[in-house]
Length: 114
Picture 1 (cartoon, helix red, strand yellow):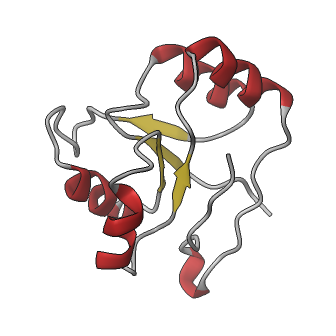
Picture 2 (cartoon, one colour):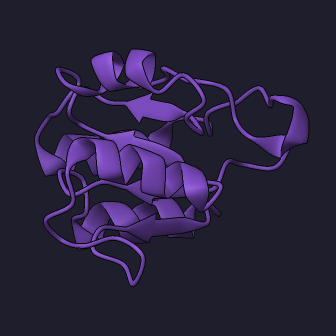
């Protein structure tokens, strides 16, 4: 299975994390984007990533589970507990890629993998 298309939300948009994921072969975008304002709300980021066919990667484990319930047709979530950036990048470099099951139409199902 091809790796999911990812979008890093405003909380995870550090260049080092982006660079590490790209180096691992992921297709990654991050906030801000031409289609995503820097000050986009959490809901706008979830729905914007979904509209672009991307799974949202976030450290915001408090707000996004509720949003996922509110918008069940979202494109998927990777919820990661926030650690130091060094640990996050080391983890991204040292663990196998997430496996994401697909819904019909190629939209990723919800994922919880870090």
